Length: 332
Image (cartoon, one colour):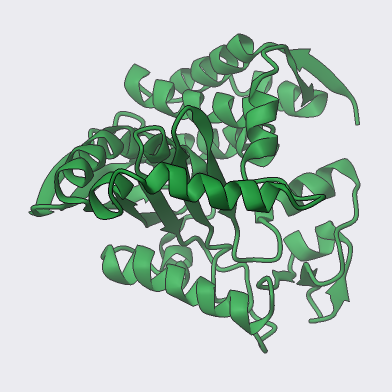
């Protein structure tokens, strides 16, 4: 694989220019470009520039509104709904997270539901933003079917990621963001593009047989949930929270509604926040730090999010797949 070194500022500029030239207004393009740039900065390449062609496809097909204007509705004193106006999710999230911070700091617990958006990004952006405000964050979203429930060979669930973040005073938060599938579909697609195999147990081919060939999984095959029936149960929970509770599309409904342009499907997102200060009291940070000290004292253990935060310290260029850059340049 041939790569080209690109600065973080250039990554942002390339993403923003491409989105604007294909139908995004400035505000929507900025929100998406920040998300893409942060993903590349932290090494989450399957959610970085890799996603730009899909964003452009959705803009060109008019499935996604490039000039979306999300609106807020207060459902209860501590539950907020953002209607994304059929735009990209980062725009709705950018509006919703500050509102969620306010209600959670007032009431101890806050809920943010986002509907009528098109989600293509990692979830750690949301939960980490909450942790940076000394709040605990949980977020999840469903997607088009690509994962077979335990015991099945046909997809029903999306990769249905879930993210959790725990704040730490004067330290980077503990954050994880994981697909309930054995591997995120974006990572499978990147492996297929780069010619890498994936572990057995990641998915099945079109004949329902286990394979380590990512192309066979991504093209006509199916992913498997992590941990068998345990991961399958968590994927079910994500469907119910991000679709049933939010009032948006389940994965199978998202597939039925999608125009198959290759861009992100429509769906909802469920986000919940807690204030450890209001719930646990003044000692919450010192108490949890004792736990983290015990955990990191074990040889070979690192806290979730450490790798990304270490990557973030490097402000130099990122090596981007050259063919991907050529594709993006052709979209301008």
